[in-house]
Length: 161
Length: 300
Ligand code: SF4
Ligand code: SF4
Image (cartoon, rainbow over all chains, first blue to last red; front, top):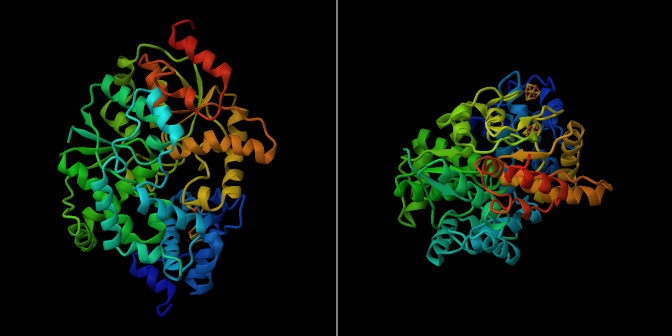
């Protein structure tokens, strides 16, 4: 990381420097109750430019519920900052295999959750077209989507490094 | 715009078509002008795409929005995740010319342009603002004698700076829509807590995700309700399929039925549980099914 984390966050409109380490975020976190996610600590690490925070698996335990962000007495956009940290982590090559798979699925069929035989049958039982009116039904729309992902260089980002 | 296009996303058409059917039936009954949105894709899933790359997230979301702009219709979602992804992208692109230019450069490759002429709506927010409890009640033909644990879900109301739906600790607007069906929204511990699925946690950290869910289920069971009602197919999937996974993992015996609000409203509008796809859930609670069949046949 050539630039410092707090500066990168600030450039993205996410100032974490006013954090007073009160712990309201951690205390409000539905994930932290059950997992190793400590939101206050992540904020502190980012503020102190501890780059190791980017390879911390706990970043991926946030459900993005926004409770901490709503409650922070300093109005720090905490959840948005966590998402920005995730994006920096991904740039450095950190990516859970399950998430890589989902992104590949979207590249392949346009959906994170693909249609299966069981659901086709359920659709028919309800009198719906077995193939929904989405990108799955229109090959040219799927090609368009793939071209768009290429234009964003998303295939390169998610390619196994 | 008065006219809407129905944005399906992934989980509704590909896992819970009952929600698609129920939504279409309700919208028709309420005389809402809604069309399909042919060629739409994943919103894209914010847990992965927004976490990976902002430009890609905005490009995919804006493609879906542009499809609706071309139809001169606002997008209607029935999913908190799709709503969060599409509405947030729409807001960012409308207010930030630089981001918009950047996104339009990608869209140009596929001959599209984001103009910012469509709004993104969520069915609950839409029904609350355009109908409200009393007006909705006028359309109902059956009073549902049910006790309901309402799960708002996170991205319907948060981040509050972009949602304009009031405060987030104890909102009531969705509870009012429950009451419009005759059902009673029962208070329970940690009602506003997340279901544990979002942010890529369900896919990336399944065990932790189920622990959060188990806590929610325990609170709901304590409240003694007939069913859970949500407005998000991802929460729906977590509560429904996740419930079976929780039973297996923690040796529990939860059997709490799960309904999307479209399905609850559908019952009150006179549609049968079968038409609304309620029987297609993973959780099979025979007592509950018998009860709603009796209600819908006017036997109770
Ligand atoms: S709630 Fe806000 S101020 Fe308090 S520790 Fe968390 S980020 Fe810092
Ligand atoms: S947004 Fe993430 S960090 Fe904040 S309270 Fe929710 S799960 Fe915890």
